[in-house]
Image (cartoon, rainbow, N blue to C red; front, side, top):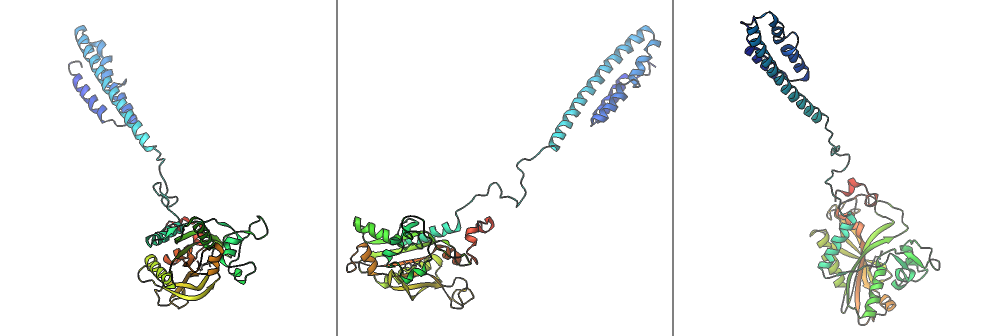
Length: 354
Ligand code: DAH
């Protein structure tokens, strides 16, 4: 047997078998077949006893060396396989903690932006600043004097019915209130101008207003207006009409125009309502504009001499015009928002459109 035993061949067979194994299971079987009790090498070792001393020694050494080589091959392959299996398990068990379900929450990169009403106020301010106006602000809590009295609306005047008022439980009854319009800021500006020699005035005054109105598609109890006031020498109604027209086309677009219709406001004389071309039908006539082609936006007029009297401006020397309209209404018209209540519901699906 020793003459026919090809020890090198056994080593090569073992090398091929070891290399072919790819799993822990396979390498275990290979170990049994190339180095186990029934392996050719083990069987050759058991037959050594029947050999001549020299031949036994020679084959014994060869088998010993071959077994060492095979054990090393096995050991290398085994550690290689277990490293591969560990890497595969880790990859399979990996958890992606950055994962999110499309549409369920905003993607991490989504950024917020200014509310549509704020964007609208900024855009309106830009138009008026471009026309030479300054921007001013006044308080939201006013006394009866600023909101009504100085604006030529004395107590119990029937025109007070135009503004359903939230009164505050502060001072004498009905003496302090949440402003119902931005017109009281006119009074603040004119009083300041008189005391600091600040005439003429060319200013717009945006801000929040409050009225005891039930919310509906076109009204909110908390809303926004922008007021305009010019006090200068030689100001006429034509300046007012021209200012409104330039503003209208600049803000809504070149095909949208304005028209003034007679109206009544206690603080202006003469007074007018200003209307702009319907932005839905562009003047053709539709349901929104009740087939007229026009939409009412606000009020305006020449500053009443009684108002100049209240703040101490000489109406023989100075004349002026004023206007006021809704910022929320502008946003509604420009973006064709059917129901104004969407502006305060904070539904992100609505807000992110703008
Ligand atoms: N303050 C009025 C309102 O809220 C709007 C208004 C009308 C403002 C005429 C004006 C004006 O400055 O001249 O109903």
